[in-house]
Image 1 (cartoon, one colour):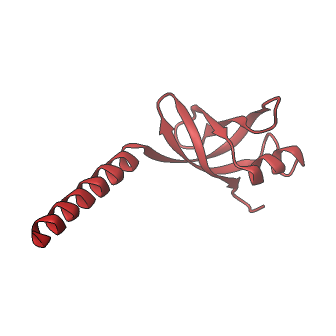
Image 2: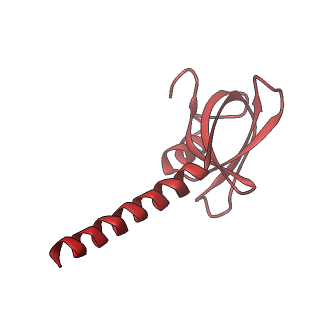
Length: 107
């Protein structure tokens, strides 16, 4: 009986971990380097929308930024329009949610 119960628990844990990893892997992780052409900070100050011009494709990429450190840099003008940005983001549906957003030269 103990072996059967431990087998059931192990199978359940394995199934849970497989489904958890599969859902995280489904979010597409994208990197882009380009010049920030526009930034709009939300009225509540808890998010911002930044538009980057991708150096490789020349297309505009709109990224939603929610981390406090980057939002503070927008407010303090340490990151401004015209700066070259290295960004890593997840595609979540029709939104691009920023994971890493920093200047290529530092900051």
